[in-house]
Image 1 (cartoon, helix red, strand yellow):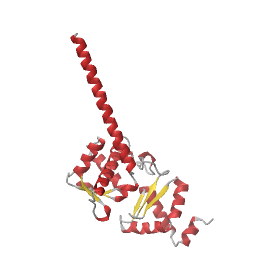
Image 2 (tube, one colour):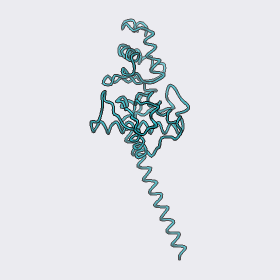
Image 3 (cartoon, helix red, strand yellow):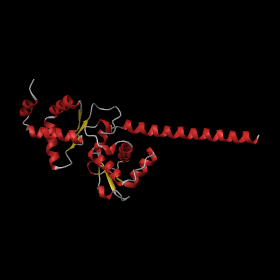
Image 4 (cartoon, one colour):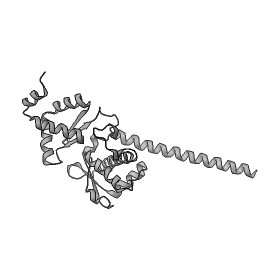
Amino acid sequence: MKSIQDRLKTKNVRLEDFQAVNALLISRGFLSREDSVRHRALYMVAQRCQEEIQDVLTFVYGANLFHDPSTSHFRLQPFGARDIGLPDVGEEMEIRRELKGAVHKDFTASLLTLKLLYDEHIVDRKMGPGGRVAVRVTEFVTAMKVNFKVDLPAADFHRKAIFMKLKKHGVAEFNIDELKDEDAVISIRPEISSLVYDSAVAAAVAAVGELGRNSAEAGASLATSDDMEVDAARC
């Protein structure tokens, strides 16, 4: 069996470029042809040596490499693809403190909300160039609150941490300095479909609905109990 270096030579791929692709996937988990001139060049390299990249990532990290030619991007799926298609911050190659705990919850809700809005606009054929969907910050915030009962954190640095994480995963583009403006626009990228599956959104919406029903039933039961106590006292 040929070594990785021999196989790269056969495909006329420089070792330096191969290493650059792997480093980017490991640090960012995402490589898109559309992100920059440098990323375009690396994407073309990755196309030529996809098997070798997969072999290295599988052997060293136990990770899978997903490629979507329709949107020209590669995505690293750490430790095997998940059935529900939702990234687990605790399993990422790079673990950042600001995205644990409560912020992790907000990040997950943000991802699910973007996918929900993306799907709704696609059904209505409201997409722009490159299959992107544009939504205003107000629409995003409202959808997250209505569907997942979550508000964006009040602290500015927490909000920025969430949005920058969304950008890192290649699911949205925006001007980070304009997001305080309710009319600011978030451009949702079609690459979100390789990160968050439809089943994840459906499961989350169902879970939130079930939680709401249970809370309502508990409230009704408590109210009935209180009425019974009042009636007993009157007797």
